[in-house]
Image (cartoon, rainbow, N blue to C red; front, side):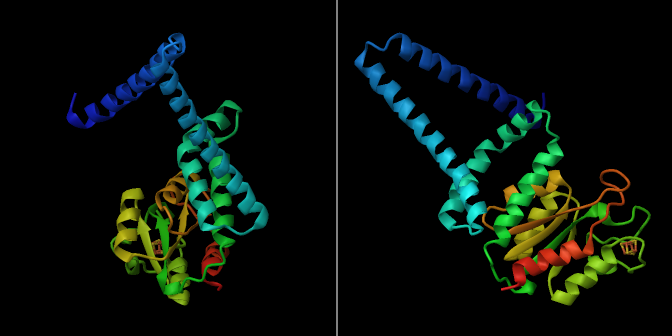
Length: 249
Ligand code: SF4
């Protein structure tokens, strides 16, 4: 097996081994709890687990409080980010078990994120805003290389790229087309925006929002009249509304 695959498979095995060791250790400690050292270790492990669970619980409560108050606070945001990072995969799995559509769960996550970003009432100068578009918005028959330079678009009207570029120019915001998460991250590093308006599908938006850390991201879901990843579309008023949300002052 080549190194690339070995790393992932190895880590999978190591993770399983780690879980087995923890369970075996707990089993041993409970089975031999008459020994003082084991009692101390068991108490420490339980205290640590309770602390982590409490932090996760406070993080979830913070999200609820911020939604109800309509006003995030940096402390609550940090806690909610921790809960989200730890529990996100489990949340999607729980949703699946209850028969909820994965896209619906991710769309809900994006809606919560957008609400929290908008309730911050931040004012970012439009020129510090980056509009990130997915490549699939470009008409699949178009031969112009817009990922290198969006100005290569001839605004022929066959897709929304031209209009989106005009919208960005109207506000003086930066606009780029990314073929995936790696390019999106590279563009963000290069341009160093203070906020992002990202257009993408539920999956790409939710992972992009999670990747962005403290950088505010407003996600705008694309429309997929031709199925995923080909000739997708987006509502221009929705994109404009997202720009106004972070630039309104
Ligand atoms: S609007 Fe621009 S990107 Fe879209 S098809 Fe026309 S030239 Fe190509």
